[in-house]
Length: 104
Image (cartoon, rainbow, N blue to C red; front, side, top):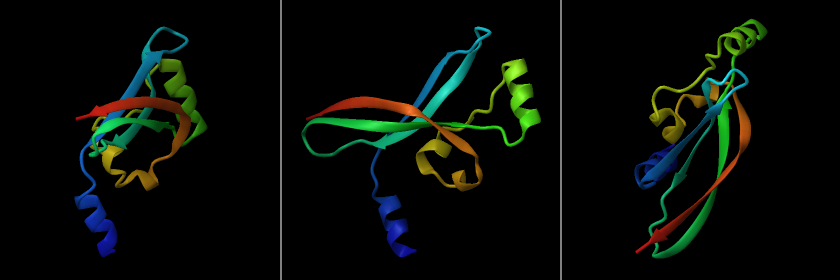
Protein backbone atom coordinates (compact mmCIF):
# COMPACT_ATOMS: atom_id res chain seq x y z
CA UNK A 1 0.00 0.00 0.00
CA UNK A 2 2.84 2.46 0.75
CA UNK A 3 4.38 2.09 -2.71
CA UNK A 4 1.21 3.10 -4.56
CA UNK A 5 0.76 6.13 -2.30
CA UNK A 6 4.33 7.28 -2.92
CA UNK A 7 4.07 6.79 -6.68
CA UNK A 8 0.76 8.70 -6.66
CA UNK A 9 2.32 11.61 -4.77
CA UNK A 10 5.33 11.92 -7.10
CA UNK A 11 3.61 11.04 -10.36
CA UNK A 12 3.91 14.59 -11.70
CA UNK A 13 1.58 16.64 -13.84
CA UNK A 14 -0.90 15.07 -16.22
CA UNK A 15 -2.83 16.16 -19.26
CA UNK A 16 -6.47 15.06 -19.30
CA UNK A 17 -8.00 14.75 -22.76
CA UNK A 18 -11.76 14.92 -23.42
CA UNK A 19 -12.85 14.35 -27.01
CA UNK A 20 -16.34 15.39 -28.16
CA UNK A 21 -18.11 14.91 -31.47
CA UNK A 22 -21.58 14.90 -33.03
CA UNK A 23 -23.87 11.91 -32.71
CA UNK A 24 -26.50 10.73 -35.23
CA UNK A 25 -28.82 13.60 -34.25
CA UNK A 26 -26.11 16.31 -34.37
CA UNK A 27 -25.72 16.62 -30.58
CA UNK A 28 -22.20 16.96 -29.17
CA UNK A 29 -21.46 13.85 -27.11
CA UNK A 30 -18.32 12.57 -25.44
CA UNK A 31 -16.24 10.34 -27.72
CA UNK A 32 -13.53 9.52 -25.19
CA UNK A 33 -11.52 10.41 -22.10
CA UNK A 34 -7.90 9.73 -21.36
CA UNK A 35 -4.92 10.99 -19.37
CA UNK A 36 -1.14 10.88 -19.68
CA UNK A 37 1.74 12.05 -17.49
CA UNK A 38 3.84 14.92 -18.84
CA UNK A 39 7.48 13.81 -19.30
CA UNK A 40 10.20 15.65 -17.35
CA UNK A 41 13.25 14.90 -19.49
CA UNK A 42 14.19 17.37 -22.23
CA UNK A 43 13.47 16.42 -25.82
CA UNK A 44 10.60 15.35 -28.05
CA UNK A 45 8.29 12.73 -26.58
CA UNK A 46 5.31 11.01 -28.19
CA UNK A 47 2.67 9.32 -26.05
CA UNK A 48 -0.37 7.30 -27.12
CA UNK A 49 -3.39 7.69 -24.84
CA UNK A 50 -5.94 4.89 -24.62
CA UNK A 51 -9.38 6.53 -24.65
CA UNK A 52 -12.51 5.27 -22.89
CA UNK A 53 -16.14 6.36 -22.45
CA UNK A 54 -18.51 5.72 -19.53
CA UNK A 55 -21.32 3.34 -20.35
CA UNK A 56 -24.87 2.96 -19.06
CA UNK A 57 -25.45 -0.05 -16.84
CA UNK A 58 -28.81 -1.27 -18.15
CA UNK A 59 -30.41 -1.66 -21.57
CA UNK A 60 -33.16 0.78 -20.60
CA UNK A 61 -30.60 3.43 -19.64
CA UNK A 62 -28.68 2.79 -22.89
CA UNK A 63 -31.83 3.22 -24.98
CA UNK A 64 -32.96 6.31 -23.04
CA UNK A 65 -29.56 7.98 -23.34
CA UNK A 66 -29.39 7.18 -27.07
CA UNK A 67 -32.94 8.43 -27.66
CA UNK A 68 -32.54 11.68 -25.71
CA UNK A 69 -28.96 12.31 -26.83
CA UNK A 70 -27.79 12.58 -23.19
CA UNK A 71 -25.08 9.99 -22.76
CA UNK A 72 -23.16 9.38 -19.52
CA UNK A 73 -20.14 11.63 -19.04
CA UNK A 74 -17.81 12.70 -16.25
CA UNK A 75 -18.35 16.17 -14.83
CA UNK A 76 -15.03 16.30 -12.96
CA UNK A 77 -11.76 15.75 -14.90
CA UNK A 78 -10.09 14.53 -11.70
CA UNK A 79 -12.03 11.27 -12.11
CA UNK A 80 -10.09 10.63 -15.32
CA UNK A 81 -6.71 11.73 -13.92
CA UNK A 82 -6.82 9.90 -10.59
CA UNK A 83 -8.64 6.75 -11.52
CA UNK A 84 -9.87 6.53 -7.94
CA UNK A 85 -13.42 5.19 -7.88
CA UNK A 86 -13.34 4.24 -11.56
CA UNK A 87 -13.25 0.53 -10.73
CA UNK A 88 -17.00 0.72 -10.06
CA UNK A 89 -17.71 2.69 -13.24
CA UNK A 90 -18.50 0.74 -16.38
CA UNK A 91 -16.40 2.03 -19.30
CA UNK A 92 -15.76 0.98 -22.88
CA UNK A 93 -12.51 1.39 -24.84
CA UNK A 94 -12.86 3.99 -27.56
CA UNK A 95 -9.65 4.20 -29.58
CA UNK A 96 -6.43 6.13 -29.10
CA UNK A 97 -5.09 9.70 -29.25
CA UNK A 98 -1.41 10.42 -29.94
CA UNK A 99 0.13 13.52 -28.38
CA UNK A 100 3.62 15.01 -28.80
CA UNK A 101 5.56 16.93 -26.15
CA UNK A 102 8.55 19.22 -26.74
CA UNK A 103 10.18 19.56 -23.32
CA UNK A 104 12.91 22.16 -22.80
